[in-house]
Length: 190
Image (cartoon, helix red, strand yellow):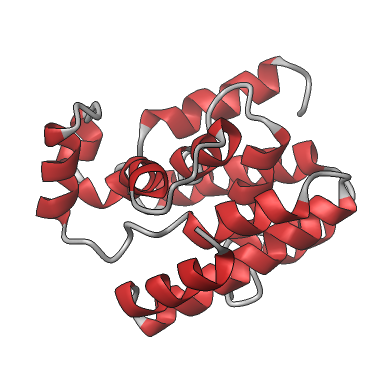
């Protein structure tokens, strides 16, 4: 499906605030890709589709996962809004005809990250955190500068800041975020 059609479909399916965020992520991801010698078209497409399931009801996200045998962790069952990444990856393939595994993985891992992320996965994760519409994320100005210098350092900073914020606020979070952080600290990115 061509990008123009995808954009029109998303504009109808997402609320206006989410659609603006989506555009911000898509263009930020494309800029990061250009800066780091990655494919800007793939980054644009992954950014455009990263939240395609975000405005779905929690019940619908759970139903899609159950129907299509997409695993649901205990934390996701308790907080089904976390499922939008997995469901988004599924929808990108089935409704938007994306078959590039790297794009699908970037969509699936954009909320928690995962160990051994590809360059595109890192770009989408970082772009989602720092797109221009974001105003209150911890360490935002530092991340925005780091992102155009070193993706790994920006990724690690986001993971660290996110974990500290979630723990300070006593908000339940997917253990994959901690696993991802631990992986990158262990592998020398700290």
